[in-house]
Image: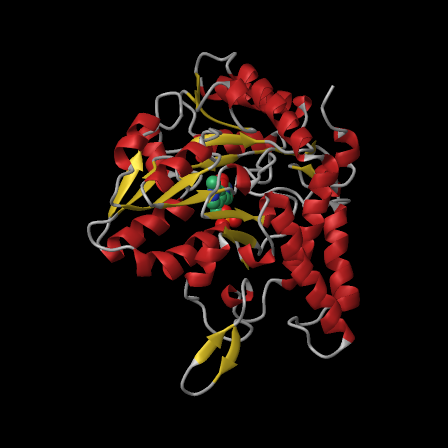
Length: 420
Ligand SMILES: Cc1ncc(COP(=O)(O)O)c(CNc2co[nH]c2=O)c1O
């Protein structure tokens, strides 16, 4: 049995009834020799339930308007919905309120916002920024380039052979010259869940800030920033049943208040004269121009959907699938699985099959209707550490089943036979 009602959840995602392969290019057309879709690429992007799609359609059908309280009913309705979406996100991650929640277009932009609006002004020669070897490019490249521009040193906490952070090395690297620690909460390649509370304590003990990348944690487990006290925290709506085009930056109000905006224009101002400009209150100061209105309202609906399922149950379900996938793939002695053991990881498994390039494996799996990700998962330096140019990654969500993992394993076995 599963900790959640998978069949009821699957009914909310019509895309999961898709047939792929054969000559079906769109549903309903000639569906001979096609196979049912098995969607196992959720770390890249999740699917979107009817409840969220309906929310988007309803917005455009009945109260689409620009926000910031135009003097007409549609704008009032859209403004309230957009502002309340910030309140809902704040509640979901344990923030104090909407003034600590900035909507961006994705998690990558959230990282860049802090690098530009805080990093370029606060980091200088002699400082260092401490990252980890398992960072996604959204944080690794952003802080690597910020260090380069400011004359600071970029340091990288080592990953151990079983895919965990080397915390002794972290204690060595984080010192009195550390300005920022930027660490991924859950690795999108290894599935490792990092000790972010311990990292935050290390940073704060040295008067450094910490930015935690929550893109792979917020969608998959209960997250409360009050439990690990990050100064900044980022995630994306499209990985958590929401639409593309929205990310979230959580920042401590005190820090966001002190920071200068780095995108200027309408909506983010209170008063403009030819000589000077006064900024709008938080969080609007960091939301220049027409914001991600529909996306914010849809993210609110996505959070309602996930909370209705229950984040504890989401986490339990994915842990069960991760263990099952890890155990099934471990049956083959020519498969290398990256990251910690099956019972100590988030809901994804990256691996390689001896003699089969990840891209070839992915295309063979596609013929089986199985969608995984193959490549470097925007963690190229980590793949250098792993000694692999690419890896295959299966990643799970609330609507996946053990039978879908069996289909994955069957396709992997076919590929092994083909290339053996
Ligand atoms: C840990 C992590 N951080 C940041 C990002 C960036 O999120 P975005 O700004 O919404 O793109 C991703 C997306 N990861 C992936 C995107 O596609 N495959 C992936 O593994 C991620 O997994």
